[in-house]
Amino acid sequence: MDIFYPIQMFADIATYNWLNITSHYWGDAINFFIYDTIKIGLLLIVINYVMAITRYYFPVEKIRDILTKRKWYGFDYLLAAILGVITPFCSCSSIPLFIGFVSAGIPLGVTFAFLIASPLVNEASLFIFPSIFGFKMTLAYNSIGIGIAMLAGMVIQKLKMDRHVNPDFLKFTTQKDAIKENGGKTVPLHDRLKIWWKDGMHISKSIFPYVLIGVGLGALIHGFVPRDFVESYLAIGDWWAVPMAVLLGMPLYANSVSVIPVIEALTGKGIPLGTSLAFMTATVTLSIPGLLILKKAMNWKLLSAFIVVTSIGIIIIGYFFNYFNF
Image (tube, rainbow, N blue to C red; front, side, top):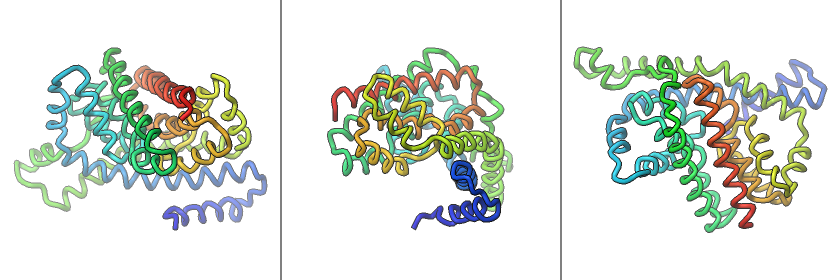
């Protein structure tokens, strides 16, 4: 049973009974908005609380030392991308850890390699892809995904955009800070719980208005853009189908596990695999809710660079799989 089924029931009752929406388009849009707002809001609270605990104990200094003591050029980017692969986070939930990395002094480009790889190459692409698309395609996708994350991180680093990170958003309490404030003594559990709740709610309240905007845009698209319209444009074999897939995927929000059935359905309708993958990767990596959350940690110039570099990488993935016809 879907754990979010009660939320869907509430959204249905609120939309069609309490609000008495009879229009099919407005009904779908409002139902989507209520459902996703509640679901993402609850997920944000849980995720940010868990991430507050993670940041509290996470050995960012050790990670920084490992990532910055490079043995050869690109080794730190490779390690960051691999760390992103083994952390099962979507774009929204990997952002708090990204914030911790930046505040610990890890180079910005290296943290971006993690931020891109975390949703792009994940548990879905590692364990679910083989049963649907085969081992060859899975190996190619994950290899290219890691490569894209590394190259994107390197480009961001070359642009020297560290000054565009918002330092006020990077403040949170670590174990070291808490012990220091407690006179060098171990912090009692009930005080740690308060610290984690405060840090988690600080981020949740800061980014939730942006989530509402992102979900609102997604709701309008969900309600008023017919699925056949999307499928008809994605099915076109012209060169612009892949960039179009990226643009269509960005307003939506989903983790890779939930979007894989959609990809399977799209490929079943004859849409090229590369175009379908571009749609999926844009949804999990460049979703508007995720970008709006990320905007709290940086200014528009750095965010724009992230969007452009990552979009180019996703488009390359799409063209690669369409060209070689996996």
